[in-house]
Amino acid sequence: MNSELVGRLERVGRRAERRQLRVLAIEALGPLTILAGLVWAVAQPYRIVFLSPEGKGFYDFLVQPPLLVVAVGVVFSLVVARGLLRDLEEAGGTES
Image (cartoon, rainbow, N blue to C red; front, side, top):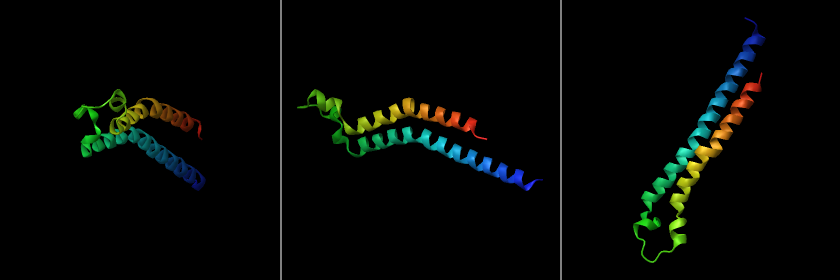
């Protein structure tokens, strides 16, 4: 077998492996962020206003840090990650 061809195949294989790791990392960011928000909510339940609502205003119900972290994870998973993965797939299709 031609050594030039083998070298080219190895480079393509490494690129494909790196691309798969990137895809896995992008797909994992959203769920890991959601998990971090849930762990934070369990570790510090006093931050969740719904559990003790007396004397709290609308802003206190709207802005709760652990729940905001969960919301960011959901938005990333549903909006940002899909676009990133589509762009990564298109860029991968044009490489030679």
